[in-house]
Every structure is written in C-alpha cells, then in structure tokens.
Image (cartoon, rainbow, N blue to C red):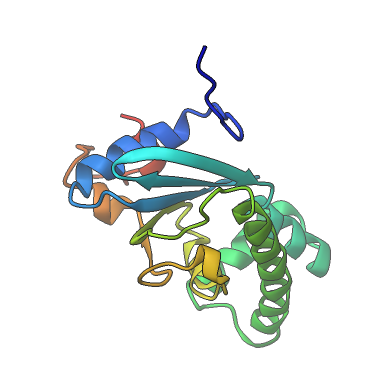
Length: 193
C-alpha cells in the first residue's frame, strides 16, 4: 500500500473555473495565485508548475465591508453599498468620505488578519508565486486592491515581485467572451462559460 500525505482536501468549483480561464488567457504564467473576493468569503488558490496545489478560504468578503458600513453609519444595506460605490468612484464628499475611510481601515485590519491566518494553512505560503489574479465586484475592487497592495507578508509568504493584483474584469475578458453590445460583461459569468 502507498500512503499519500495530504494536509486537507477541499472541493470547490469556482477556483477550477477561474484557474482554467487564467491558464488559458495568461498561458505564459505557470506559478501564480488567484483570489476570489466574494460576498461572504475570500478564496485563495495557489498554482505552481501549471497545476492547482492548494486552496484556502477565509470568512471575510465584500459583505463584511457592507455590514461594517451599515453598523458604523446606521444605514440599511442598500445605502451602505451606495456609499461604498461613491467612495470607490471618489464622489463621496467631506464627512461621509472620512467616515467611510474609518470603516474601511477597520475592515482592512479584519481582512488582513484573516488573510495572514489563512496563509498559515498553506504548506509553502506564497513563495515562488509571480502574480496574483483577483476576481471581485467592480464597485469595491479599488478598496480591496488597496488592501492587497498594503499586505505585509513574512519571509515564508513573500512574493518574488510583490503583490500587484491583476483584476480579472470586463477589460481582461472582452476579447474572450461575446456579449450584446449594450450589455456589460459579467466577469464571474464569463469565467464560468
């Protein structure tokens, strides 16, 4: 009998769809990570030598930020989402911008702590990874982009070129997916087709 030592087995479909798309679109990249910041969780998948080797999730996503805005500003979800969009588009003014900045800073700490904890579950961290691809809703992408770029990683997790996320969005996918000229390309749906 042979024994194969696995740390943990996860079954997820979205990481495979994202992996297939990233592999096909960026075919020169063999060592990379991709991150999906969804509503409730963030999934991080590591690809080395062209194969998925590990995946980890942590329970902080877009809705964490929305709930934090709701709680801090005493507004319903729809208003919180609107405020975050205004902030991302740099049209939130004065006191509102300052209040949202404070909330974002708190959420960033939660996200960074959860990310750091998740990295401890990976056997090799992010060593040897040359790029990180990210899928996220466009209305909060600028906020999470700052979170990702500001991460401070220890030596075990260090990247060879730093964390400069490449967002898999409409701009990256429009050459690969045909849609009606009046429709926006939904990155999540495009990745799964």
